[in-house]
Image (cartoon, rainbow, N blue to C red; front, top):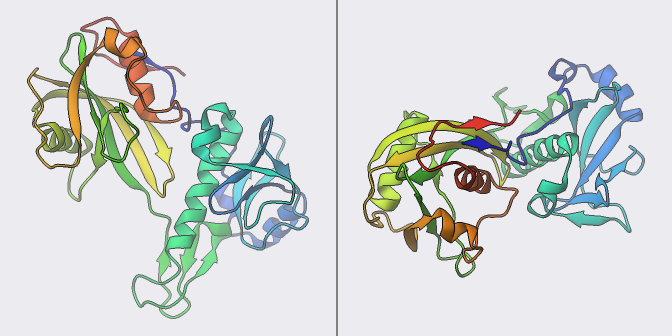
Length: 290
């Protein structure tokens, strides 16, 4: 199976982490920066991708995102979008963004949502302040440092080794929408263990083998989706934990017919399904496009 690279697993900007503690350099960089604008729900975009502004009139809350090939600094500014500009969600435009913009947007949104949800110290409860150009929060009261969290989740294309894959649907989804199985990794659990547990919990099936495919950041608010293909012995699914409304087997022809609603292209779920659809029956060794 050959998989395209997931839509949000792309980047073309050096994060330049060594610059985050250099306040003098950051001040100079801000004066000549290109700025991505985010209002908490949408990013400012234009017809070509992310709308780029200068530092003038940008909100005070800002994060350093890195340097491009021309040594131009990139920042994200969080606050109202500039008047007259168009805003879009990452789900809306993720597949239309180039490598540079895709990497910048997921970086910016992940930081912004983490800051919004973690204003206080987890040690003593006092308010924290942003530091390292937006990449940590410090507690002035007890000195604790808090770093952006990333929650690993496994997502897997379950198949029988032949011409069937297993998809499920959640009650909140539009009618006839199906997708791959997925779930968060629990403490003390390997990724492969999580794949086997989630398949058993959601569909009552035992995983015979699983193989890593690719990963993709999913900043809603802080997930890293780790994609697998998982072979199971064919059997009728049982909804063990009640998280799904339905789980059922589909043939390639059924999915190719267009009669089944699948996840949008911005998701790694769609990457996994499309890769399986394009592969000959029985081929299980995954590769990813460079």
